[in-house]
Image (cartoon, rainbow, N blue to C red; front, side):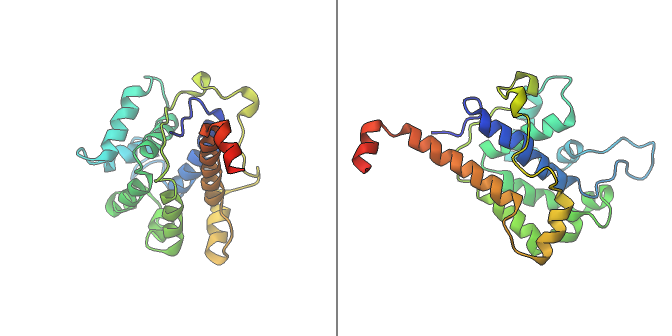
Length: 212
């Protein structure tokens, strides 16, 4: 079986409105809009992904897939979301994040000195983040990213399952001083629950009665 967002709109909603925005907020923390000069080209995460992705890698495979599947007018946020979907398909999301933060020279050029990635890349809080992402690696994803207008998410379901007052920077600060269930745990747990529910749906009714 596969975790397929085309047949499971709830999974797509969780990834699109919770998981991808949370990960993007962490990676954007301290990112400068311009490097060096106001006249320089505006920076965003997709440009950084392009700069740091080696050609002969699984990460580049995901990037090329995004470029092939994206429409010509797709913005960088949609490309980033699609990239995350592809990395989940390849079981490479945690590996990519570890690879990304190793580019210290590039990060120091485009991030403020207080940015999360520069300050915490060698600390427990970053290890906690990668550990949460690693929990998704064994899951068999078969995801396809489509623009919101073409997705199966209804207008009434375009919302997050997380509290509206949740803020990533607040979570980053609190995570340093206390141990609690983080939003990443909640999302990982939610995806795992969907996986278990899908397994249960595949068990024939007769088999379920036998187990009872």
